[in-house]
Amino acid sequence: MHITEGFLPPLHAALWTAVSLPFVAVSAYRVNRLMREQPEIKLLLAASGAFAFVISALKLPSVTGSCSHATGTGLGAILFGPSVMALLGTIVLAFQALLLAHGGITTLGANVFSMAIVGPWVAYAVLRSAQSLQAPLALSVFLAAMLGGWATYLMTAGQLALAFPDPTSGIAGSFLKFAGVFAPTQLPLAVIEGLLTVVIVNFLREYSSDELQNLNFLPKTLVSEARP
Image (cartoon, rainbow, N blue to C red; front, side, top):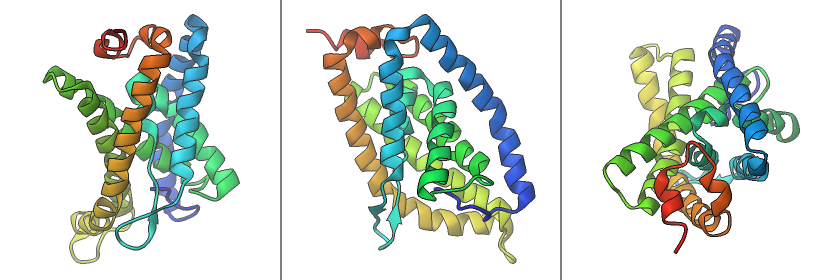
């Protein structure tokens, strides 16, 4: 998922940066407003960013014999809504590029769009859809985190396909090739991320129910089921 430094053509890198910037700007406004109006959730907000940083920095074995990364952005999208994760994800990816050589500065915009924008929005949409169907809370959270992480990799496959179309089959053929590598590689890690997110949400419901109750984007069931 972390497209490495200098891998994208300059025009593509610039375009993805331009596309991501408005989302990050709105996210910065949203985060600033949250911290100003609800200062008690600062620790929870920081914990969501730290979770994304740690879990997306870990290189985990994949089914193809290589290593891959989870994303960790589903948790923040579930708790605060997807807009918040654009800023948190940008901070996470910038630190990883500078300190861990994961990703890069020129490809930061592309990585932000896939992991901090597309992934959280997919996770949030899945969560709301599952809840509208009255799915159990644990299943809703699991599907949201899992599919949000998986969507990140599919988006990255699309970004790479646009930058490097196949000489014969074009962008579509290139996407199928990249997705054919990313999708099976990421699926087991997405399942693990979904399960871990369920565990963390259950923990927060038990020990941080007051903070969760103040979050505007929190589904009502997360509060109503938190108390006996």
